[in-house]
Length: 193
Image 1: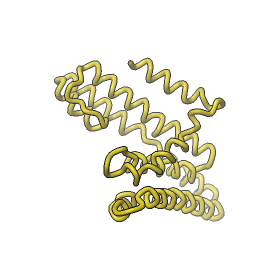
Image 2: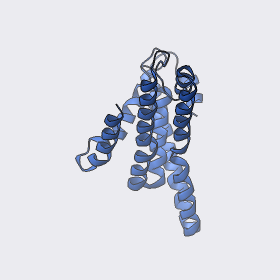
Image 3: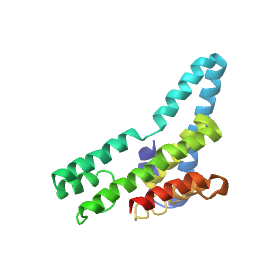
Image 4: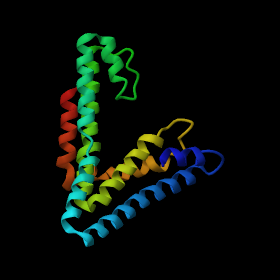
């Protein structure tokens, strides 16, 4: 849906407005559709609803794949520095051509820590706050940011709203009552450097 909308709307004038409208439609749609679906299943059968909620929540948490990818970076690095660089380039957006082995390890672990926050901790937070609809809305915002929230010529205006919304949605990091969650992530990142 994001690629479909981007290809049709990211041209011509009013790119910021078109990107904002697409973002709001997608986030609102996923939230409301999920809320409606969960409400219907609750009325139908409570046990079925619990099972469905557990399945959706499970698939929204993305830790296993990245852990596997990071492990592959370390295994490739055992073969050669170039193999480690190549494997790392699959999971990071930076240039890996000049990285030394320790920098490759640090980059892989930093990516794992960031994705632990974005792929596990934050979705669980939004699940606890707004249930499965909140979790899926967060995942949509995060996905929009990762697909169109770039500061390059193609996405600068079109993706700006999605990037800002992602910053606001992840604003829980700045909430003093929730700082222990964010502080643990920051401590982990600092320990890896």
